Image 1: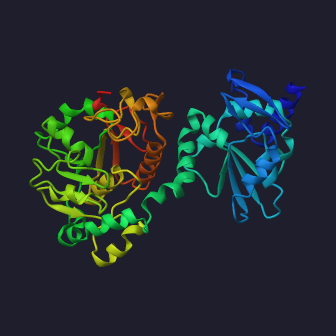
Image 2 (image 1 turned 30 degrees about the vertical axis):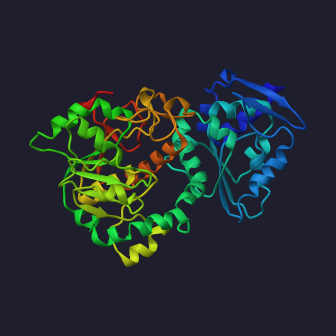
Image 3 (image 1 turned 90 degrees about the vertical axis):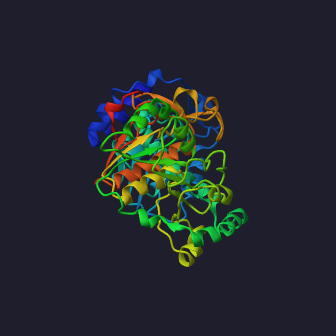
Length: 432
């Protein structure tokens, strides 16, 4: 009977979406650690993750469908589940098109052998494709939580974009304009903002430049020699380093051309003022005033588009830099605004290769240690490397930025950290 169900489901898919059927026939659902779970309803448990509710699958699907406040003529569903959400959504008379994106081909193949899904597969409004065949997510969407956890390697980039979008509202809460801590920090920096320079004076200052962006991922430790030697070359790249990379670079005889800081939790020991004379510090106004005051070089203030900065942008105008949650985003944006045509990333790992969190600092100095990381991201070797959810979100935002700037060639110095879509590996630097 199961074989008959699978045959019928696949026959319809082959008729409507032959390329999807061809791939499904090569999936290996038998290799999944799967079992049938009984309750009021039946469902599947795969790798310890329950695909749907076992008590009332349709009630669960109705609850998720109701999370979209307004009816939309075109919707996207990421993950296939057992077809319940698709059935509920297709009941809406206003729906004209339902795009279903497969996050794990083996999971979908398993579900096709477990239940008759001809009803929703046969609806002419339905489109079916593998999620990993697209570079970006589409809105509005529903994402099945179980399949976000079960997404296969090919769909990992789309999974990361979905998770980032789902968490966007929550992440933005930590920087709300009416947060008393935000208000207090901005007020404490108002005098400095008034007297300090403007990051905009750097814009256009390095046309055609090759810029090194130095972050503090573990792979940075493989490139200290290259960075130091590059400073003695005739065509010396411009080095922009993030706040936490400044001290490790100094420890290895490397002096950055520009330092950028945005984090309110950075302290003087993380970003010391020693040897900073003549080095511009580009900062966003949430940086602690003590850190700013001990810097000997010129200070250049910048804003992001955050609503928290709105009154200051009007009263004390400064240049804007792109912000996506990590200091690497405004660092890269600064390089592009300065005129870079080639940007090479060092230590931009968004992950924990070598079982550590940062180069030049104790494991876990800026958060949980690497051994506690529960998530993964694809690395440059085609494998997986440990990471955290926030790092996957930062990676997503950098990849989106890179896609928006085709006029700049982006390179990644290491394959051991996260694979960054839109970059080319700088093989001549191959140390990892």
